[in-house]
Length: 255
Ligand code: HEC
Ligand code: HEC
Image (cartoon, rainbow, N blue to C red):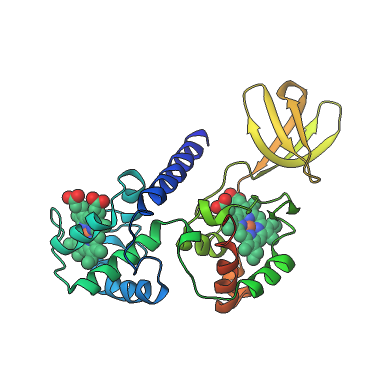
């Protein structure tokens, strides 16, 4: 769990760093939904066979992971795609087609808040307030069962936001495992395990308060592996609902 947490922190700070580098002179296609969509189509035809339909890798490397460890400027990305590298063939496309691919590849790894997205954020907010905020907080309002999403537009990417909603088991967030405890005194407690050492457990109770529990006062401890986030949004929500939710969430953390 420790290791996963570290990886997330590092990837997030690289995203932030990379955002700064990019501010200098951005090609006008960057973050433009129509160009990103055109790039996505070209990508599915010419690149997905090696890099996977969502960039996660396959026969070739994951361009998402590589971008986190090995950030490239937009110009370098353009040159790599056009000229090829190692066994990757040169794309040799007209300039605009090449930049559309760069815009698409960037949309996979840039903070969501930097990429314009389709959808109606106001409708997304209404849906969020009726279906999600009993577990998630934004701006201090909402429940504690899931992560605070006040800054999720900066810490997540557009594809990751969609995946978080449609496939919540794909990438777990540390600190949200449910536990049921029976204390030596007979008292029973349930909550989320925020931290755990050999001696101590940090349990977050339903009301959000934290309780520090010495392990030697615990009689039995049962931890549930599965996430509490519902897994049926793919069927329960419409395509438009998901698009609207993502367009609302991507704005969280914008200044
Ligand atoms: C035949 C398989 C193949 C195809 C097709 C292919 N790639 Fe690659 N790609 C690779 C391999 C292998 C690498 C790693 C090359 C290396 O570093 O030696 C790579 C590297 C990359 C990188 C990362 C460069 C870096 O160093 O971080 C990007 C971005 C990329 N490809 C994008 C694309 C795009 C966009 C397309 C479609 C126009 C594409 N690739 C088509 C195999 C492929
Ligand atoms: C029953 C509680 C619950 C409900 C309802 C719920 N979630 Fe979640 N959500 C969670 C938990 C718990 C996690 C952390 C995932 C894990 O278990 O590792 C999570 C994770 C997420 C993440 C990823 C957060 C991150 O740090 O990357 C997003 C985004 C998200 N939820 C959005 C939503 C949206 C949108 C809805 C409503 C359509 C929703 N959730 C409804 C509990 C919930």
